[in-house]
Structures are given as C-alpha cells and as structure tokens.
Length: 421
Image 1 (cartoon, rainbow, N blue to C red):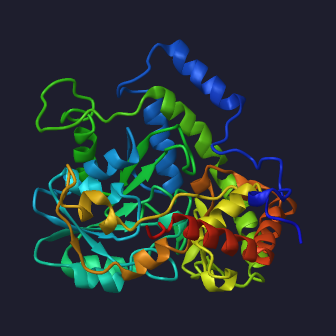
Image 2: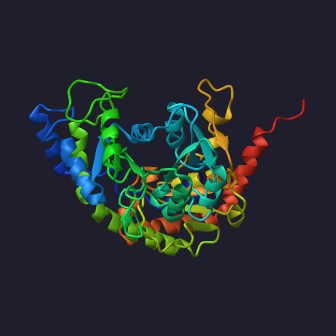
Image 3: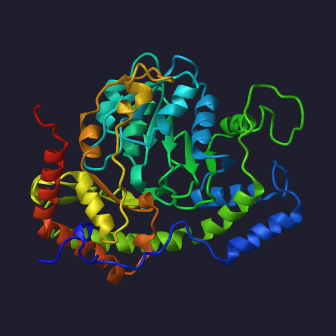
C-alpha cells in the first residue's frame, strides 16, 4: 500500500491545476487604455465604470447597476438604501461569510441568524419564518457556493410580511433560478468581485435593482450622498465607495468570459460529483439537484465528509491529506456566524448584538464541509475530466490509507496529553 504524501509517499499530482483568477493580454490592453486616458477614477459619462454597469445590467436583465468598492460595501449601501437603522433586525443565514452579518451590524442593525437547509446549505425558509419579529426589516438570502437559495419560498415570506429580500450574490454570478439570474430575483442584489469570485478585479462589487427610486439612493450613498451627475449639493450622508476605472475595465473583460467558464466548470463539477459517488462517506452539496436551479454558479464544489466512513479521522486531517496529494482544497476550519467572536464573545473589543433562532444544522455542516474550486483559490473545475480525475484518485488513496491518518491522530493526542507528576 502506497504511503500518503502527508507521510512521505509520492503525491497523486505534482503539476498545478489552472490558476484562479485568470487573465490574458486582453486585461493588459484594457489596463493600458485606462492608464493612457488619465481618467483613473470617479464617476463620469463615458467611463469604464458606466460601460461595465451597462454590460452587467444587460447580462443580468436588470435595469439599474451601481459598481462599488467591494461586496461588503455593496451590502451596507443596499441595507442603508432600504432604510435599515440602528436597532432594526435583518434575518441572515447562520452559515455564510461573516460580512453578510457585519454589514448589518456596521449600520447599528441586529443580525438574526436563521438555520440552513441541510441539503443545499442555503438559508432555510422555515427557519426564516420563525426568525421574523416586529423589529424585522429585511431578509438576506445568500446563494452560497453559487447555489441559489429558495427564492420562491423566500419571496412569498417577504411578501406576506412586507419585507424586502436582499440577495447576497457574492458567490453566484451567472447562476439562475427558474431561468432568472441571481441578483434579479429580490428587491436588490449585491455582487462581489474579490479574487476568488466568478469574475474578479481583486476587489470590487455591484448593487443591482429593478427599482429606479432605490437605484438613485444607492448611487448617492456610494458617492458622498450626492445625486448621480451632480458635483455639489450633498443631500444626505454617504460614503466614498466608488470603483476605480482600472477595476471596471478588467471586469468588462472578465464578464465576456463568464459563460464560457461556467460551461467548463459545470462539466468538471458533474464529472467529479459522479466519480466521487462511488467513494463511501462523501456526499455532494446538494445531494439531489433542484430543477429550479437552472444553472449553478460553481464558485465551489462542496462535499460533506462522514468521518465514520473514513475511520473517524478528523476533517482537518482529511483536508491536509488531500492538499499533500496535490489537490487544492480549503484548509481552514469553517465557523458558523453566530460563533464568530464578534457575536459570540462578549469580551470581544467589537462585540455586536445579534439574535440566533437556530444554528444546529449550520454548525454541523461547518464541521464536515470539504470545498474544492475557487474557494481554494484554484481553477481546477475548468480542467478536462482527465485532469480532475486526480481528485478521485487522491480521495480513494486517502480512504485506502485512513489507518495511517487515524494512527497519526492517536499519536498526536497521546503526545499532547500531559503526564502525571
């Protein structure tokens, strides 16, 4: 039996997968054009920002787009534009990147954590219903990993209670629900263009809406509280959260590649999901495709690990063994939002108010999740199935050698236990 690479054996893969984010001479040409223009920032007619907003709006079939500094800024602007104030409650999923919740907290609002659907890891509409109180002012649906949340049920809940749905689309650009793009389904959608996202300029974001009045407020809040096209007369408090012309130029190029890349990633994900189904103890997320998810955003490919099927090894040992075999996978331990120190630790310098309705399924998922793809900074899913087959071989190797991992964990535990003296 070949030893695991973690313990000196030869790794399954020695050459890297495709990198992420991707770029070529087209980005270089776009950047050179902005450099030569001497107009590197600001909001003006004929700008790169304006051109990217128009292109993104056409792609999403949404009439109003405002590019902003990053996705977190976009969430804050969207919530402020919707009137969220200090003390207002906003329902958010217990499993998401912490910025979904801290955007609420930075406005003085109170994030209320609802649990997740165990199959999709997106917010559970049944838990949302329980979370709503007389102080609730909005619901944030996160399309986690590129998988759309159940916008049909969430839309009905929002309509019944008069609550706007904010879509956190940081990981879902290109995903569709019943044929409609994420971001176009709620009152307002927010995208991120950070390094791991489906299109990237290192940082950046966009806020999109069908509501013209809301769009005007969003445009004002990102530019010092002044109306679009106005240089003075600041009518409200706003931020400077504009996007640079360099970033907008890159994003226009990246958007042109998006559908082609999504097609390739869909193929790679389908192959891996099918091939890994023969390995006991790994379950894809979601386990059963929802027909209303007409396209997955494929920010990541997620599986949950059943430790018993791998000899009760820890999730951290499994991830480390995969990485040693040359397979890019997220190594850090995931944490449910209510357990982040800013919300869980009253001694934290910036401890913020929150309320948790339920978190059990989110906590359980965080302890078992294995993430491949852009979440691990890799373009692995773009590869031909002949290349990503190495992932299957690595998982099978770990399963065959789980005794090595179990013994190593036992030895570490013995070493860490202090002896009697």
